[in-house]
Image (cartoon, rainbow, N blue to C red; front, side):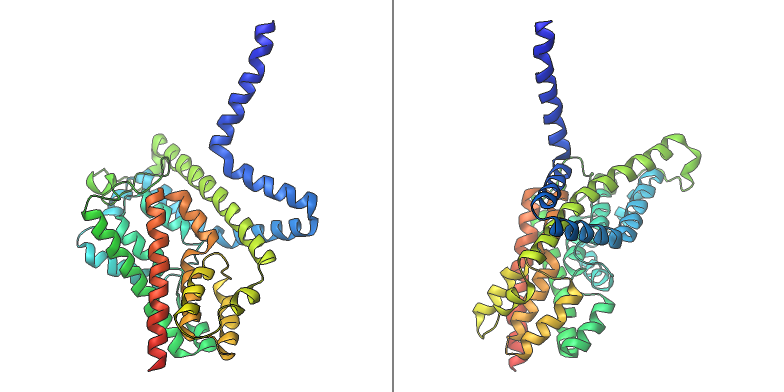
Length: 350
């Protein structure tokens, strides 16, 4: 009896450790909200509402990308989709950057699609090009930027999106050819890679898969698994974004970016990462500050760096890829944004 009782705490501890290992992200999110409701109820309600609203906004993208990924896996079409990104790596990088610049995805909304592409085995170079270009510009953003900051800034931001995507794609391509980045995804996320098993192995495609129980089961299994995986990381990302907006006022952050020279551009690049606003909300703020003397290059660097590598988006990226790929992503985003800010500053000075 004594031995039985002594085993209870041990089993409980084992269960807790397994649950913590698998569901620590949900536990952290729940813990943050619990503390907010205890010590700052108003902020807790605001944060919960912010998370709910943003999750609702991303649901269409999440459902579409998860549904496509699950359907592709169940039918065996994921191999066809992955092989569509093969061929000339150079051409795929250019195509992915252009498609990214035209797609209506924000920095967090693009995450479900990226997860699906990587899991299908799409080459990381093309995915990185899409990943970097997509959050910076889209058609509606172009017209709004034109109205707020002018056509020159809108064209510059469009060129910045394409250039950043192409730059990142080629960096990854060179590293991949050297033997690095052969397995970019974290364990359990999928089977991607710079080549990808689904690219290398031809599988039979069954478009009307619902007649086969095994494929139907795979569809639901993969769909639910991917949805829960992305939902937990996006929930944590939106919680942190809400707290940043509450504790780090955007006007205070942006007002520190005034002045001329290289320093404001560098500061804008670094500050834009953790303190980014919604892309549409950031435009009038940056426009007002530029009217008060903020360097155009600093404004461009702030918008590009924030769009690509804001903290909420970075957390979602961290959830998908291994540490070395994550660090490479951040490095490309920061160096690319800084270079873009410098070049735009030089262009406006001509």
